[in-house]
Amino acid sequence: MVKMSIEKSKTRADLLPKAFMHFLEFGFYGTSMDDLVKTTGYSRSSIYYEYKSKKGLFEASLLFFNDVFLKEPVGYLEEPDATLDNLQQYFDWLLDKLRTQTPPYKGCFIANTMNESSPHDKDFRDIVNAFNDRLSSALCQILCNETKDRKIPRKKLKAMARYLMTSIYGIWTFSRSVSDIKDLEDIITAFMSNIKVMVREI
Image (cartoon, rainbow, N blue to C red; front, side, top):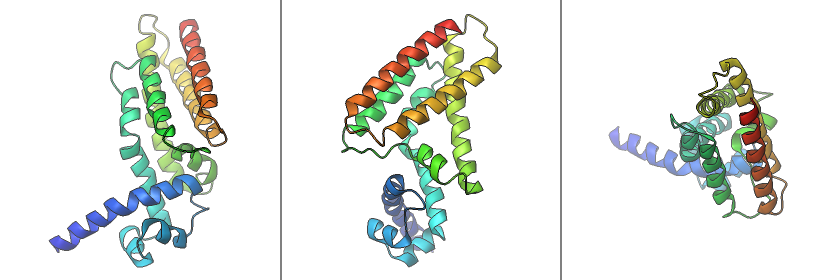
């Protein structure tokens, strides 16, 4: 029994990142079980054994994106004393990842899922919303740190944090259509400049 448990863990550790990269590019509805078999190198029976269904594997991929892939960049935002410099670090980290890829870029898995799948599936929507709450809370804390000497109402900062969050998703959605990363860099530079002005004028 112990050996089976270890083998199962190794299978998941190898299968999940491969499935995640395929879902990132093609989404839930654009992926078939045959696609997953080809992409991961595992049989249908192995995939079903580990995740019960394509939906189960997609949900695991969303959690993988949240807990593993985004651990470092979102970690910058979640530092207790994070400021807008941490938000710039977040963008810099993700831009560095994109520079290793060839356009068109794959975008953000959460943003892609929000557009494609979450309107049609409550389970996907719940996972997306949990991540939205996490990102929004981190951004709100950044705004609190940036304005700590001005006693801005928390409600106002929360609303601004949600605005920042949706703007960030817009940037990553746009990244799927750019042919030159310089276009994305320019947008992020303009976004950060505008946010700094907004924070000063709150």
